[in-house]
Length: 87
Image 1 (tube, rainbow, N blue to C red):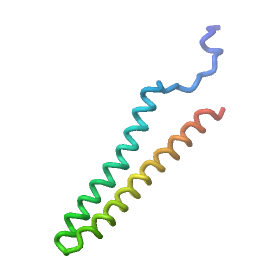
Image 2: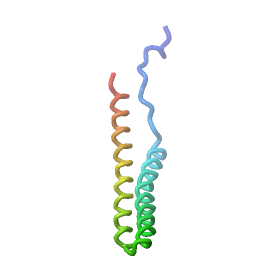
Image 3: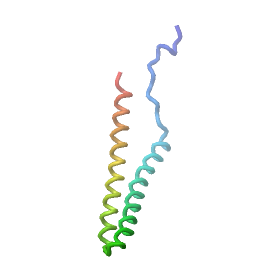
Image 4: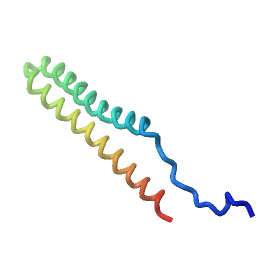
């Protein structure tokens, strides 16, 4: 009998640099979404004469979408981690 058959498979560990890069990417996603939607809101607002209001609304919508994306990723990742730990 082979000794490698007796071992239980350990969960795959992610290097700290990869995990940090993933986290920075997610935060960057939130920031870019807020900026892009804010810029779009400002552009639309100039057409209607209320650039500041639309810029704030756009930035809030973008940040909300970015945070939702971050939340969805974190919850999916935690469920994936829980499933890999269960026997």
